[in-house]
Image: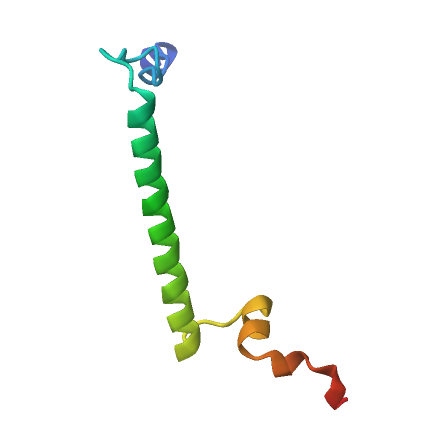
Length: 83
């Protein structure tokens, strides 16, 4: 019973953020823009690859299409003139 009475508080996580680690030199605007362009290029490449994989999966019939994809690939399904 003595062990339950002595409850230690959980350890506090290490501080994260600008106060936790101070940079010796701040980054310049040119460095930030370079990083941002590289980050945006990586993100757009990742999105393009995912879209290409999705299109290939839809073409093979591996995944079901959502409404927009169905309208783009098979617009005759939405033609009300046949009724």
